[in-house]
Image (tube, rainbow, N blue to C red):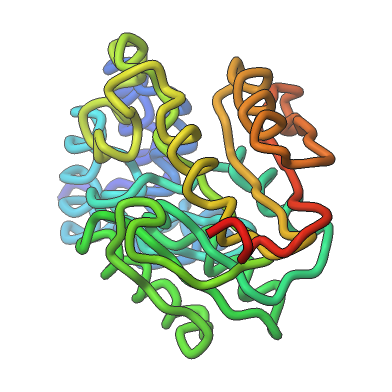
Length: 288
């Protein structure tokens, strides 16, 4: 009788399969998928790897690996992604939360805020995280996609902030009129001619409308700067995530709109990642 394979043996074979398919970080992805297929926490995986693998677990795992070979993102396969120490539901209707976006969180949390707006909220990872970190604040999440808003609502419920958040289907500020002391956004900033250079994991599987403006990658910033300023309270901040080459252009937009204290903040890899500006000196309501 053939002895069943151990977790280590199955994991090693899967890692080779993913490596041969050109999947980046194959070993990491194989471990995450094996933990999910096994129904164990990733931190316990090392303990269970010497044990035999059941036929059911092996079948589930190999099916997941086959989908990963086709470059379907791991977050889609397991249905979630860690972001700022919390687990968020992820579906093909929303962008996969990324570590570099945590820079925006750190910048937003530098000062207190009470009324928060997240434009293009997607999974809600930014909005929900900021509300979880600032328990006295309330927030609004806007997105054009009803499917994305449904994901964001479930994430708000998962993390216990749904009683402090409102989700609105809106094209940027189109249907949003309240005043805010913090407006954040991670808008589509990839230029149309740069889409072909993206990894297939992103280009083929994530929502295109959340990746690119089908233009120069800056049109969303222009629209938000124009529309959001009337809603910024005195002293309120506008905080964007940007692509690493867009710091100067987005900073210029903010300065031309009379925002003050404009600054560009790098991520942990030293690439420009966030631009922040502040409304100073008068009541934003007078700009309507």
